[in-house]
Length: 93
Image (cartoon, rainbow, N blue to C red; front, side, top):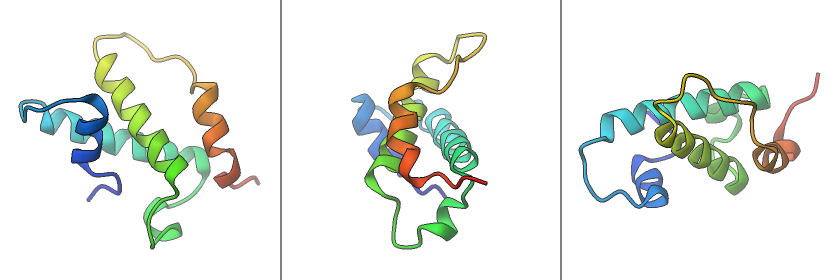
């Protein structure tokens, strides 16, 4: 089960059809996994009351980016804007 809802990402992308729901869900799952790894946190366990807004926004932006760039051969580094939004939530070792 995703932490960020499919409906949130569809609204972010202004998608009104259901044709790509399964594809989008895969991108949401991938974005959540990436953000969790980047933060070095288990998003569900570490935020049982819900994710902070910057973390949700980062997942939505990444999922949207995966969806928009799905034909690209590779993705470049994490955008600086997302790194800035996530900085206060990252666990440093």
